[in-house]
Image 1 (cartoon, rainbow, N blue to C red):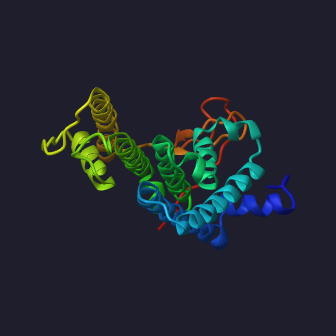
Image 2: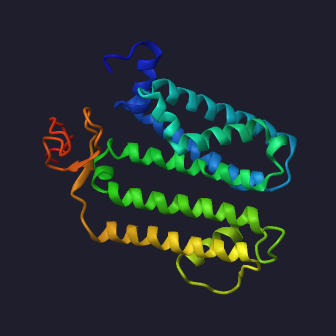
Length: 260
């Protein structure tokens, strides 16, 4: 942080630093994200009222400020726009500030559910703050990927099937269908009635099973690698006992939990 000054230094400390204030700041962001995800999954699909638009503007303003702050502290600005998660945030802000323009496009509503990705990326940051998260980082990553996948596929199912499929009338129906397809349970009480729906079920099953098996593998197989970015070449994954970067040979310092 030696090359950062003023506001940039303070924001970087809140987003990436350690300490009680930065810890609670990030938990506040996670709480905000979880609340807005719940709102996205409930409000956008129902009848819109004046109060909903006010909430849209408030949420859009907070997300825009968060987006601007993260861009401001990004050392390599081109990497910021290379992240699809950041682009998802930009789309979310647009849909929140222009609800009258995009409210009739159901698929754009799905992109609001992608905000779940941003929320769960915080969990990856928390891994470095507590020993428990560090010990279970691989499992946490796989659970995060699976939960986000369910969020997004259920949103797509809802946006494309409501009004066309008599078996899907609520977001709960969409989540229920997504989970039953992903787990290959297949109760048969909800069926796809068109080719697009059937292809959607196939994609959900194939990708979902892949993520599910990755989670099982993470549970049964120990992970001997940790996230520690090399400041020279940028390699992130290293062995837990590594003292030099495997790629460029530069010394690295991996934080350890020490004696309990």
